[in-house]
Length: 290
Image 1: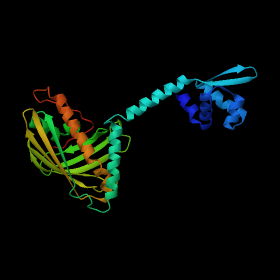
Image 2: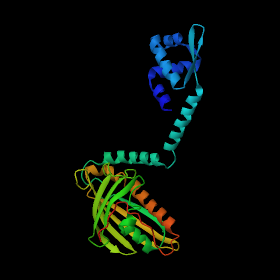
Image 3: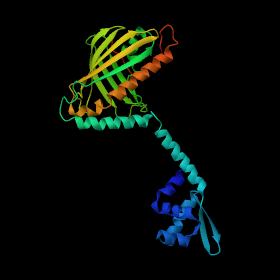
Image 4: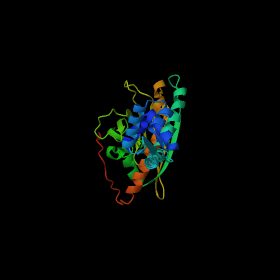
């Protein structure tokens, strides 16, 4: 496949393939139709033959080339499979496109400081597990690290002091950056405002700009309500102190935080068979200060 792609990448060779798709032709005729010199045309045809996309026969004084359709069909199937993978409904590409639309709109709106102040988002998730179990996933660093990022990221550093005035630090990296050699995707710092175990948690969290300044401040209020099947988690997310440079972050709030909560719901559903409430943890290179 690699040899075929390299062979077809040259415009002159692609022209020869197009001509041979119509019918087998001799080297001399191909050179004329392609408006190229015959020695050059011969070299291109030899490259295509080595790649398996054409075949040739000497007929009298001429060498006649013909196209082999099978490799092109195999390539078409492979390309179609790649396109289908990228174009799957609700897949990563769809999320990327959705973020791109939001990003464009937010950048246009971000004309001066405070441009997004008062903007709010609401999220509601019905979760498996008791309020006490959900509370642990909201406040214990090892459990928070399992879900507190969007789908394509992972938590690389986490501090969450679940007490009024407690410190919050969240650093996240690309999920496929296993050794941490790539730049961090982002970092946020904040403070816990109010704590009512099993009932309500509020905190402020600010993503950091590349220069270390605050992009904006998110005021996050999480309310827990027991239900017959588990716990309803009601989240209110409000923005203040927005800077012009915060547009890229704000554009991803609804998508990213929503994906995080979906991950939390999936984790709790998978762990719901643990009747004693014990849940496995994953350090993910995180730390917690209590």
